[in-house]
Image (cartoon, rainbow, N blue to C red):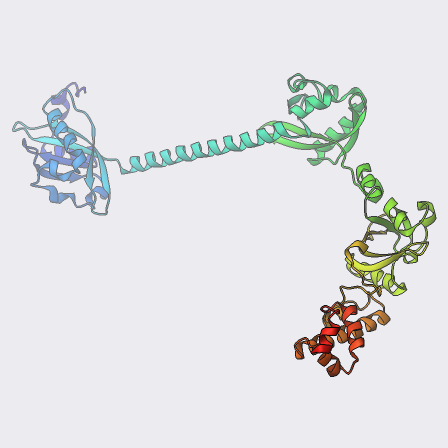
Length: 473
């Protein structure tokens, strides 16, 4: 450290008051120490340091006024003060009366004949705060940088694996800046070889007029709707849309090239689905909204005993479906109201009189062009066991089950089934009351034993061969 060249000429006239003023002005905190490092006096050059109450240090060793981690630095400062040619600045922390530490940058100088030392201190709290804010800002920038890198990586991956061809074009030169691998598949060229070419060269001269319109629209409005162009050797139709982008001073637009979406209606179903319906084991019929046949499959022709689909077309489905016309009316009413119906139990009568027990599931398609209805008809005759009288063995077993059949079964059959149900329940109650003594049960019911055995066989209740046993009882 260099001194003033002529200290006697410039500072020789200073008295003790002038030196004290000079020391106070030179630092935020000044300590006068004796040769042993004890604080003799303290002066403050800032209001903040004066409010800390450090004047109580007078009479204490300097090393005891600092935090434990700073004591070695105070010892080093006292050693440096003995060397007039080497005065280093060192950070020392003092405890604050308001909590925390007060960082002070000190330099110590031996200034008296008796070994007195002057320690000049600069309050570094503001500088420390600035350093902390700078570090926080750097860490925030680092986090933002890595977040942006992660976002860029994700979108770069999406850009690379997209099935749609995407071109990013410089708006000033109309040259391709970036292209994803799907462009190579579409144009039959590598994506790298496309970069640098104009968009008109990439997509063909015949599409130049369309592309100029597309680019102009993107510049004017920021984006454009799909425009149809033809590409490739097979001249396949594609849809191109554009989006205007801005990066700093550069203007770009993004071109997305995709196949047109295929809207599929009933008449555009895949051939495999139509073939599956044609050869389905269940009968299938399509009708108009009035129930007149539009199309059928082979299983329906077999059930209805119709020789061809052409003869069935135009006929009302109730020609075959339903025990009576009521069945089909109920079926159509539910279908129009709910849109779908499942497992509607009824019968299908063929042209030659063959009757089959069937379950009908249907769907209404009012939004189709033209509106129509689809019916899936399953023959369930093999699942239903009938007795010798032709009555269905699996009859309703409660009033609730009977009421569920209203609208699906004619009233005449409902009354017959209800009568059978009541008769069966009465016989079961009589047998239970007489502990299965059939002769007594016949008397309770007011029947002859012969009539009771006939009804037991009809309803499948017990072993009707025990007539002789009952006679002996």
